[in-house]
Image (cartoon, rainbow, N blue to C red):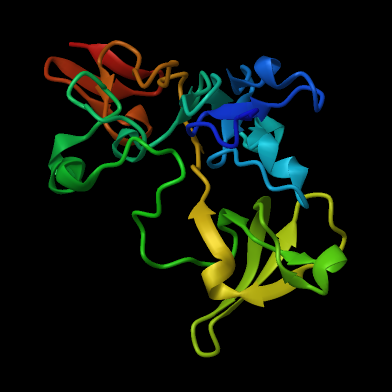
Length: 220
C-alpha cells in the first residue's frame, strides 16, 4: 500500500514525484519573492493547486520573503496590525489610532479587516473556469476591483493577465490584498520600522524632542 502526500500547510507548495517515486513527495516553502495564497492540496483535475505561491511583482511596495512572510519595501508603509502578531516593537504602529484594533489583528497577510470593498482595491478572487463550464475555479487570482455592487452581490474584477474585467459573485472575492503606501522624506525603512524620530502611519509623526521640518522629523 503506497501513501502519497495530498496537502501541505499554508506557506508551502506540494511537490509530487513520478507515480512510482512516492517517497519523494515533499512540502517546500514558497520561495523569496512569492506569497502563499492558501493551502496546497492535491486535486487530480486541477494540479495547479499544488503550488499556491503567488509572484509578488504586481504588489508595489510589498516585499515577499517566502512562505507567509511579508514586509514593506524601503520607502513604503504597511499597516502592521494587518500582518504582525505583536506590533509593540514596530515604530510604524500608531497607538493613538490603531490600539483599538490590536486585539483583532491577524498575522495572515490576506486578512479582510475592512468590511467595505471599494473600486481600486486589489484582491484575490476566484474566477469562472472556462474548462469547467464557467463554474467557480479551485484557485484564486490577483486582480483589481473595477465595480462593487452590494445591491446584486456582484463584483467586476480585472484579473492580472486578462484584457477585460470579469463579473463574478461577490462571495468569490476571497481575500483583500495588502496595500503599501509610499512615505515622504525616506521616513519608512524596511521590517516595519521608521527612520529615527519618526513613528506611526506612513511614519508621518514625530517622537518627543523632534519637530517636523521639510526634511522630516529633526531633533530640537
